[in-house]
Length: 76
Image 1 (cartoon, one colour):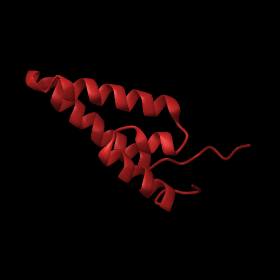
Image 2: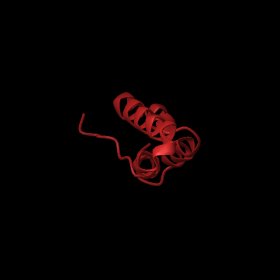
Image 3: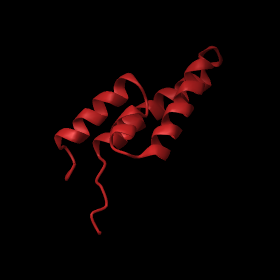
Image 4: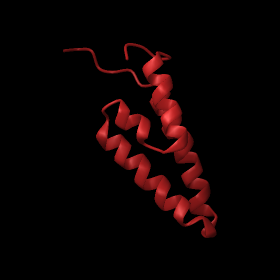
């Protein structure tokens, strides 16, 4: 995954649409994958409170965008 918009980033973004954090896991970003999965899962589980569901939907969208715009550090 050399640049934004590469095939790897598109695949990661598509993975995040179905399961939040899965695209980050595909990219090898374990902490981000765990964070996005847990926060959206908890938010969606508390959908009946409305506010957590809205926050979860926003975090889900941020997760998709984050995977699509990821640029690996190539300094080494």
